[in-house]
Length: 111
Image (cartoon, rainbow, N blue to C red):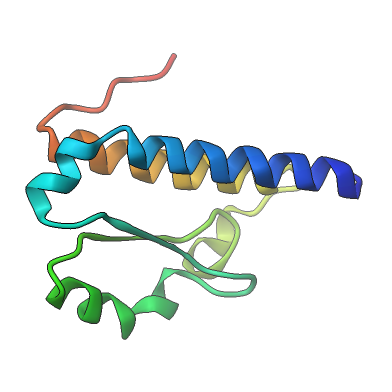
């Protein structure tokens, strides 16, 4: 994967995550604030946010923490094909599950 491909994937990722969050305004209004989705950097896991999460929650903000596949406590799931696309799916799936949970829906099976 070259630099141009990485930039393309990064722009698609940020746009898709932003679209998923902005399309659920009713969920945000019900909680009193926009949700935070915290994504760690390299060689970390969701645990790195443990001191920040309570601060955001006391401000009545919903907080969702993801650990990316192949990193942190999910390091055992790393495969040769694990990459940005896998990490994008991790974040997108977290958002989808949290939005469905907020609306009381069961997650649809993907076949």
